[in-house]
Image (cartoon, rainbow, N blue to C red):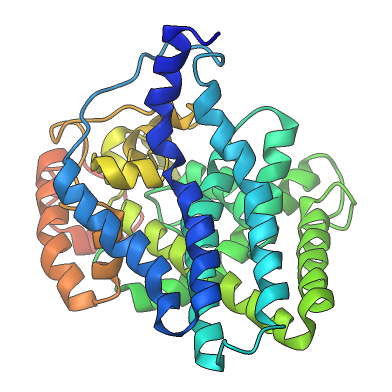
Amino acid sequence: MVSSAQLAKFSSALPFWCSLLLVPLVWTTAMFGGWWVLLVPITTWYLFAALDAVTGLNLENADLNSSDADLKWYRLVTLIWPWLQFVTLFGLIWYATRVDHLSMGALIGLFFGVGVITGTIGINYSHELMHQQPKYERWLGDLLLAMVLYSHFRSEHLLVHHRYVGTPRDPVTARYNEGFHRFFPRVLIGSLKSSFKAEKAMLARKSLPWTDLSNPFFRYWALQGGMLLLACIIGGWLGGLLFIWQAYIAIWQLELVNYVEHYGLTRKHLGDGKYEHVRPHHSWNAAHKASNWLLINLQRHSDHHYKPDRRFPLLQNYTDQEAPQLPFGYPVMTVAAMIPPLWKKVMNPRVRAWRAQYYPEITDWHAYNKGKTPMPR
């Protein structure tokens, strides 16, 4: 018999399972075809933006002394999702390449929606899994990334982004006044190069060449090649193209979020290539309830960078005196990021206020960002 305490834990975790509803939704749109295929992006962007407005903010913090047993129902959704995504992605490739009611436009729209799911949910869940200690969780994260041809994100995120966030050495930190359309190609190239360089450097410290089979890039390439081959076996050349298309959309969704998370924020340069420790005020925070359900608290990004080993239910919220706050959740902010004049109108004043609050001693940020001199103490 289920105890009241167990029921309470399940009820507390249940809102974070809302992502699973996207699976029957995308299958339904595939069966109806036509304009119905737009339901997935409409749901993830506009419905959750509306829900944020209705549900408001969640400013409460979980008990940091919670055990793994207490978090069972939270963890379970991240363990289930990779298998659901695998079956959905390749099942839809099989289905879509064999039915007659889906026009080419509907196919493009359908797998645009699939990419929104594999990016918004899949890559986000891989992000949670790659930070965990159990090997099977990290492997599940690798499988999710291989499904969107972005396996190097694991190396880039763990070895580069967390170490160098808010500095010129992090390609993922969006610069002040840098529009997303300039950021996107820069980060695609920069993250691939920096991740490979980081893994090569780790091998060099062990006196091993980059060609050593312990280099995770060999695993990345094998998994990605296997996923693409499977898509082609199931759906032929069209299946392969649809797989690549959803992967591109997923990557675009990821980098939109990356753009939002650190836009214009920098860490203090202490000299000799050293920077201050990462603090909560080096990431944008958002406490919007509904979108944090969908994104398993990713918007509590200030605490994630401050304490990267915390599982998502334990991520803490910060006040506007402790971390900079986004005016809306990610569903709204990522749409705004696609319109650079609107984005800069909303965010540039906030960046300037952040600078005045945390680093009032800097009066010429343009000169500081161009040079490598230490920030005045």
